[in-house]
Length: 414
Image (cartoon, one colour):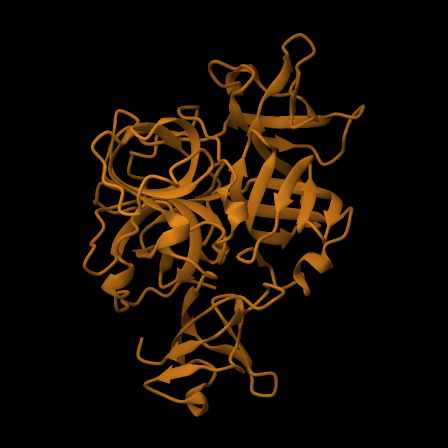
């Protein structure tokens, strides 16, 4: 799934109004709270990274990868050819590490709203939890990982090795989950799930409770963590109950406790961004003029509400446009996400066809299996034009088991 470095045509201007924070799971379950904190021991996201060229950071995106060409988040195509790409802990990875449905942060240059495009300077991949599955509930569409309830929706994408999707997950299996975190309720709306049976470390993000600084323990939604082995320099400032943290854990419990090997602040937010559009959920609500989205304070005293204000409540999924000043979102417009983009998510992939199977009517594109056996609209070609090595743009929803895309449109002039 190596990203192509050739220039590509822009996405249509009809999808150019989503600049920060890509779409989350498209179901009522995605209204779960996302509690986040600021500051921490990681570099502030307003500093242009090494390898990002001479452009300065003027946009910040936190969302779900919905396509590639180079990488599409929130309807914006970010050119990742010069970007540094890392995990949330700063480990450099190749562009091929990015997969459909992952949740990522992008520090980028100014977004061209006419072409829905921007230059990515730094990309960070964010995992919510990685560890063993202790429960699977196919009726409620949930799994439990390290004590956290993971909610499966119609937009949750499963790695193709998990044939059958949720039905392929077994108790004891190790999985990695990308998604939207409700750190208060211990729930994660999953956007992508991968099998990680060879994992040498577990990961967890959540909010501290039951802190015991003498025993060096705390809990996250009832899961007991021992942090005695974590260097004191890693312990975040203001370490206390209620703080959001992210952890690396040993893969074996000791005395019924998970042993932390790394402890960091759970979330970073830029102090100042001239162009911001954040899609997420309302995590705190004082009034229509003052609330938080994904833990980021929002001043909406002068904002417009195109969808009305009746749905602006705690837990609602919204899209807020404006700027960020001194760590506060200055909202110009607040939209209700469920009303703006109803229905299943459409995924968008561009690249060269591989592993074409004319019997099964599938091919591989950017690491995703694409099925073209349904009603497909072809542009600048026909089904006979499909061949290995041919560049295409494929769009469509996920299949029922959410391990592959079902193409509804394939373009050959890309």
